[in-house]
Image (cartoon, rainbow, N blue to C red; front, top):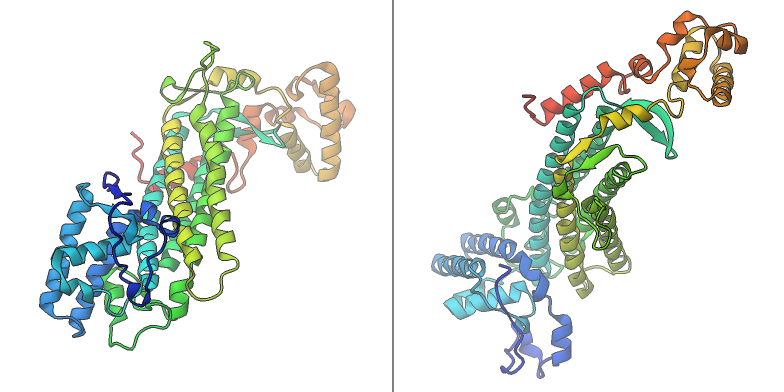
Length: 475
């Protein structure tokens, strides 16, 4: 399809528009150039032909078209689709959009029967039918990419069993966590992204075809027949709503934007962790770039671009929100502008998901560097407070005791694990020898036991859940 030429010639005599019966003058070149949408909505050709096949079949079934005319139309549509996919179809700007290009080409190909195809149909219901079909297909493609990234993250977690990393709040070291736990947090976010898209798919899967311009038709069509033929749940109940609604696009782009934000956060973390200051991970050369002037540089550019391209996806949503905010019912030509942001959002997000999965497959975590830095930050402080609570000390009192213990460590330039029992008892006599079972990052992690926590057994359960859900082979 991308190879199909667009005829930009202005030397040909202008073709009479299919809607031009009442007009005495042709539109000016400037208006025609400004108004055309074929340069981008030709992407809907497959959905447009699919809708026309279903519509022609229904018209024949209802006695509004002969079987012979139906068969001619179906053969003609097959021929046009073949030409488009072979790159042999000429898209004409004077035919405005994908619908008029295909219908006019069909008329050129089979003659009079083609003029019956638009019976009980308007471009208003036609375009939104095409758009719903396109969005449905696009959602399925995105869902596949989300699952691929989830699988990549789970496999990365499986390769790094037992690795403890600093957990951060406010970008300050907070508590020790298993790397698996951290990676699975992104898998959880992506699962919600999938859920939003599936909910959107379910809500958009209703058929506008047959709503015509806005009021329906006086002809005896069967909208349930076309709805079933196109795989929709049912026809839309209200013809005005059917042609004017773009909620499904807004919801789709909203879901895409949330996914893009999640990917941006993942990208930010990996970019930080790949820096010399962190040094926690090294991406392979196959997903890195160098500098044109600094020969030593190795940059995690793909994830920087993921972070950057999230702005495009969010911008596409904002464009649609502003586009729709002031439109009266029903259809308005403004809605022609819904497609480019939609197409851009989907293309950009798919690219972000694919490169993030590729990056996940190409990461090596620097175990030695991470383990050397783990003592910094007194990550076991909260676990020490839990120890005191188990001894019957109120948490606020425990918090104060541990705070003074950390202050002593800072003055002595040591860790909590390095404090002697006498030093701890000087702060509060409640401490006993078993306190050392709670100190150090390894002991700290093992003490976590609440559902969903970073304790090794809890994380093993989480990992097992995702391995089973995503059907990952552990071998």
